[in-house]
Image 1 (spheres, rainbow, N blue to C red):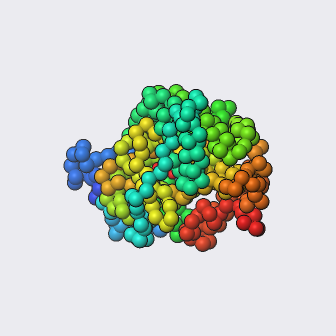
Image 2 (image 1 turned 90 degrees about the vertical axis):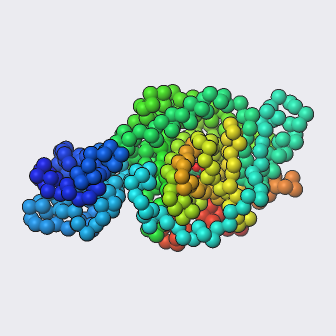
Image 3 (image 1 turned 135 degrees about the vertical axis):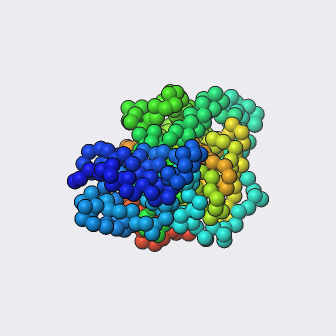
Length: 455
Ligand SMILES: O=C(O)CCC(=O)C(=O)O
């Protein structure tokens, strides 16, 4: 494998708006500095941004042609001059970035491209009905603790929210504001770092943790207009600090505290739900004891064609409870209800809580896991922090035996029971199959739950 020479680069640095120079690095993993802007643009700092990206030489060759043997030797060939500079820039971002999964940063694309690439565009969104006629229930947690007179009413409200909505906002939850604000500030600071620094925490092929653009797009599916940083902070002994940002320097401690608070809030909410379902709280809590907690911080860049893209495709959450906080004032979460999309306007300091599929199953369908999505803003970035709580690996995912239906009687199980690991494998296999073979289903969540034959 020949190294790239300064000469090669100089010969090609006249392409408008893109200059590649200083390739270094061993074997097939050279390091390029990719600078947007060309000599003809002049040295204007406003037009010039620099990214250091690690490129594998095994780039997709479809957009390259080789001009002569000498260049072919280099393993890359010429840039095809018929390709616009924007496409080249996009392509550079799309190449395997170091050891990451090779998904470009949407944040960078949003900054650099005038037009939104087709793989994000969803013309079908025009047909969606968005309705502000209803809003999700609000649960005041201070009424559920401490034996107040209105405790029973609030418990009933919580029960109805889980049954009829699968979503609610919780206020007076007891999580100190300071910790939430610190988490929000650190997440914002992380996403403001240059791509090169964020890439230090890039996802690896064998892990779903780390920094990445939205998931790799399977055939025929559209890509989400978002990047994320995903970390499993709990259980503590399962932490992989490789993915915990070192900048800002407070990030580790902030996340550590935030994750502990989310774990406590999750436990408290689960025990109220257990009471409402007629269960000994311990029966439900023991299934989640020591389970994995995932904190996913989402970054949705502004998008010129915001009404044609989605920050997060419609999905329902797989696990137990999700606790979501919106980082800045930009609204974006919508839930599907009676065929319409209902935007959620977050209340200041509230957490948005939603029931995941495993809770739906454990409650034998009493509680609903609801499809939701995130839209993006044409002018402003949006950030959110979603915390997912999984059962432990010894849990059996199935309807809990003591669950009673609305009529107070025991009901036949509507879902299969299976060990957690088996459930996850089967569920992810189904998810992949549905997307690969059948395209996007009408309601992905409900097609893929493991119903019994009878249900
Ligand atoms: O950003 C949001 O409001 C939704 C995020 C979400 O659904 C997710 O991370 O799974």
